[in-house]
Length: 550
Image 1 (cartoon, rainbow, N blue to C red):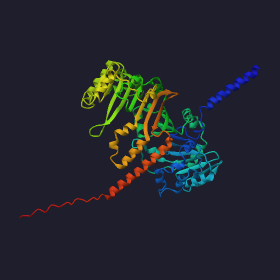
Image 2: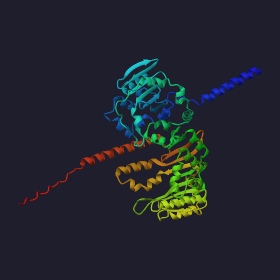
Image 3: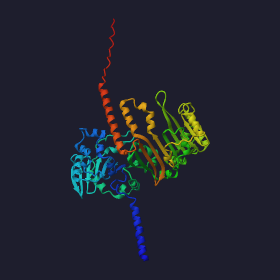
């Protein structure tokens, strides 16, 4: 009996270890290289149910593309009905972008529903590519596009050598210089279909955590890989700032619900920076500082709670401590003074939007910070006065500030600043309960901003149409979070729409269609105005020749 019991225990232990190891892997990333720069995973079934293709076809932007006589026939066929591609659009599909020694490529992966249709689509996409087959994998390879598929899935790769010349500062791509090395698309597709799990995102715990989240779209960005080889990253390396971007990964899961778009985000960093984030993360936004705001009618809001000591560690990690102390010493304080001066609470708000006598928006703006060491904070104020004379406006009638043992406040309304520092108030903004317990938060009330800028935004009849569509669409946006959890910093982002009863994906589709149609009208109006403009060159009269005298 004892030996049998031991065997059961041993078997259970092995099973638990196996299940534990499996929980850290995922099937979605099995054919994605572990150093992929960007990955987008789409829940085909969910997206199709929330936004049927027949509704997409009614979109004005869609119709403009569909009616373009220059698009290829196979693209038009796919636009007419995605099922014409032979791809199972009701199942998950993904695409990813990868930079490599040949520049880079974009890959699309999914499930084949009808092989004959997919074969035709692939042949058209590859512009009459060469067909082949090896080890049960079918290939159609063209000069830029290669498709491959087996009984389970397909992989399509598009060569993109310009990715290596991406200029992140101008958001553009340099044109390839000289000859471009031809990519072996068949070899690449074969490699992706037979990718070792250890070299894929299938074994990445962060990616596994991402795809386990319930949502319509999953997003993954490896910032270090995306910006590798760029001039900006080279400059950061020269400044010894590489530790700030090594291991930098951002993930997000978006869900389109009735009247709302929800996005859950998580940011990862390298080992040293993550240790700082974890050790010095904030706790909770100061409710007292929020309640002291001059009005409940808040249009723009930002608040943060942090441990000031973390700033010192961050600066040291980046190797910038000497530069910062050198600069701040010129105005009478150093990094330690700044750290001691702050207790770790910041609140910024713009409220009471209205229009002045000229019709321009006017508002009440206030910024406040909690005071740590009052003497050290006095140095910051003195530095602000020194720099601010005739520049920042501190101490002038346009900008006012006040301080107490607990808080410092600065704003454009003297009464509000003094009240904030003095008795304070008991304001309860509508979003106060939602940000409770969060180390950081941001809020924007679109409806308040629309009313404030209505006169500026409706000068033109077409601009007025955009304004009206936007007013009917957007209500507010709220970001909360900032805490450190399971190796990364988490945040929640929600966009609330005016219409609470319709799915947000449908509303977004309709809104983009309206905006696209209006933009087309604006372009047509500009072209007409340009063609109607007649330029008459000025007549230049030559001076009469001077008289010749003897």
